[in-house]
Length: 116
Image (cartoon, rainbow, N blue to C red; front, side, top):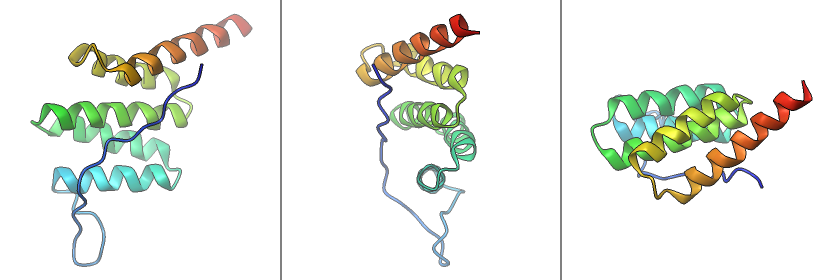
């Protein structure tokens, strides 16, 4: 059983120089996606977590938390990934991908602890 790494998408917004406008939700989202795609998972996690705290839109918050979990997982921070996905599940208990990821990471954490 593996972790499902899906992204929720928003329409991008950019400044004149082409960089994301991080003063907007869409700009923060675009920055998080760019960082993730560049393999800068720690920064992507921080960006999506920041976005989840700043937005007032529940759907955006859930997507940002989910993506923060993906980034944390890719950064090797399993406990942080689990915490992000569990926060999604608290708000949306029927979110199948967050549920599957949470269960897979719980199992991975347990396996690693047994190997220690």
